[in-house]
Image (tube, rainbow, N blue to C red; front, side, top):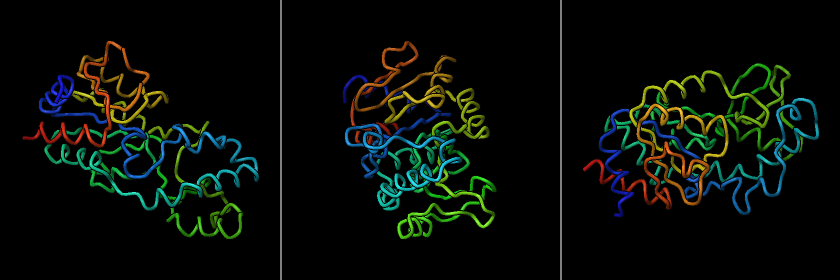
Length: 252
């Protein structure tokens, strides 16, 4: 292990109230594509905004087509070594909160306690009515859309969509409040597999780091926090390889 890995291991070993912040790079090894990366869906489709979804039939169809395109990958994905390593840290009593930008549900599937998990951008694991908020299983709705090409509706008359945050839609206030509270209470923060370019989510680790706690960034490729004085450890590499190795070393 190199010096930066050694520093990461030391951070993990010393922490008792760690804030773990994760992005798309933690899930690519599970078969979940990076939306922004080469060949990602956002290189082929313009995301439908929240207002467009509410006001336009064509936009609702486009949104469901986009979600259908990636549904099987989300449905069939399973947690990888990085998700499991987060759970190992949690079971060792070291994790205060896991804040994720991801909508794949893999942290919870790996065993992360829902009480310690904040999914800032929502989840693809449920379908939600935009009017009454009722949630239901996705598969029947995707099958309906696959057969009819008509956006499904709730019995209350509201439109249904995956329970994710669309462009222009406010993040849930309760999720933000939990994330900010975690940033104020943690004794260290680590960002895994995120380009740290989407705000306000990417502000969460900075809120913690600006209190003076150690801040580690592990990612393959550049991030927008690279070079900031708040970053105390920067590890370049595949999160699904680097992070589990560091966790194993820290828990020896």
